[in-house]
Image (cartoon, rainbow, N blue to C red):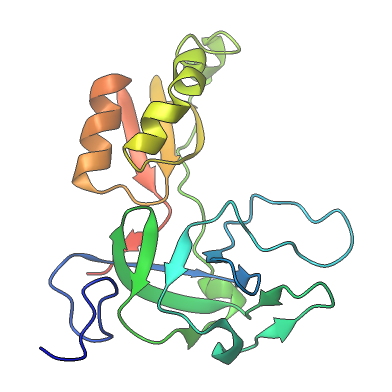
Length: 186
């Protein structure tokens, strides 16, 4: 079809699973636009672009609800709900972002601790394996946001807990439970 790009899906119905996240988005002109995952801590001064968050493709950040440009050129949105297809470490939007309220912010997945979890050595034996595997994980498009012991097993938080990611991590670090920050749209 003429005028259609294969690289970025058109906004509209998607054949692949959709994921959603409600957060702020930041970008630096000429660089990627990223979802702010709340891990970065501002040390005073304007934000720096949330480069640790997942990239958002198909977004004109200046037109997003609540967008503000800081003196250092970083553009930050208000709190917005994003919906898109996850692929190659990025969220490809399938619809325009919508304004959201603070109560709708997507929290990180949590796993309630059990008293027996405190008996695991600090650092746990698998922690070095995860740190040593950073290049391997990146090659598989996996970015671990956090991990720890929960209910007697390894609990890993990633951006998207799709089948491929869950299977890879559960096999490599068994026993492991994997949860995603971006949520599947039902």
